[in-house]
Length: 522
Image 1: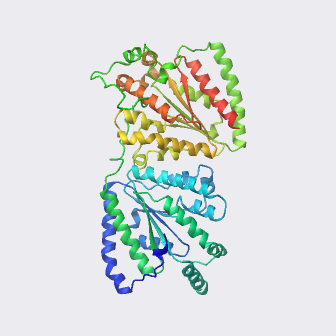
Image 2: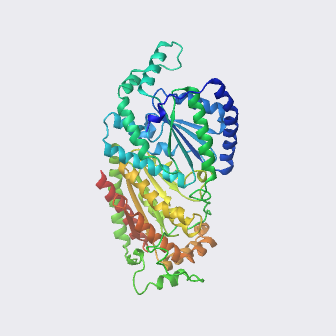
Image 3: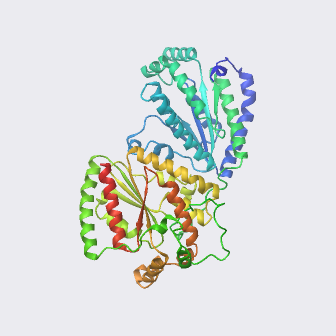
């Protein structure tokens, strides 16, 4: 792979200067085109130590408008980054739509170094690279342009440069013992890098190897590749289409995908049935997993008080233990409007120390959130070790509200199942206790609660005309919920379905389930 980058190609000063003006002009034009297209650009600058990556980075800041560049030098994780799953640091460095993010080191760096030094084996390297590829694919499918450049020099060239730098007292950076140690492992770095580039070259995001022995040749080739790949990337239609639309603030809590494929589903009636009629149409047998739930389950007031107090006391002890063991927890609550998510959250929170938990309500995305991949706003809210984050609605809005209301295209919400499963797998692999609830109530119980809220002055604001409109889409939401459960209830992150017609029963089940999962994890 690297043989063609060791041919010794050079560029004289005259040939270099004859190309610079045109390339710089075109780069600035394309940078403006990136802003107009509102698409993020990821420029990864990798390569052999001593190949001039820092010089290239400085050159880009000179040739482009640095005000619209975001530069990220990723070395060893900081203490803040080590408190969360490994890919948290990369999600937090995602450039917004319309900006160019330049990565000096990236999600490929750590796997390469760890393999060279024997911290992981080839199988573990491939697993790490598969995750990197999945990350890049998610970015590309969301409309990002990903450009990956590898600057290469031979082992002899690297040694020669190190010697020259050591002899130059005015050199901008010294050659360290670690540099020479890496040099001694050059052959292994080359082997692992070859494997990495081969396994992580996507059709939409291939690696480009650039010969970096001659600085002028290197700089012109970098600029030429940027012009070519930026132009091609911006010309291609995005897999995602336009950026996802914002959900209306009063959007319902989604109720997911169907267990059948579109081809298998019967055509929808022009006049959608009311929620009540839709529920009664299932009288001949369960249409989805939700129809198997026994909504008649209930607890007496005395039993509720006794079990809740006992569970909260145990949860309080476990929460303190969780802090000592540096274990984090994430709770996800989804459910129908008026299903009791708020009440369940209060019962869990009552057992926790307010300093160590946070409730994140999810509504319509802000402008900042819309400028990123839809998962970005959830990654940013992940808790530090020893703490708990409770999501009142979550990333599942993608396959619920955004699906049913048309805020996400079908390709977008269909691929979201895999993206969500990968996201949750990363949380669990890191040791986060992840608990997901769907709070289910009947259409009749929902209507009763709506009417009850309308009769209470301080609850009246919770009910709008939108809530009643959403009831007409109950069948569509029910299909969406069933698909969501089927496709995202995994062995590492199963769904807990909560029978919610009786609030006492639902609240106790939520607290006791979290308690059991936490107890098992600790």
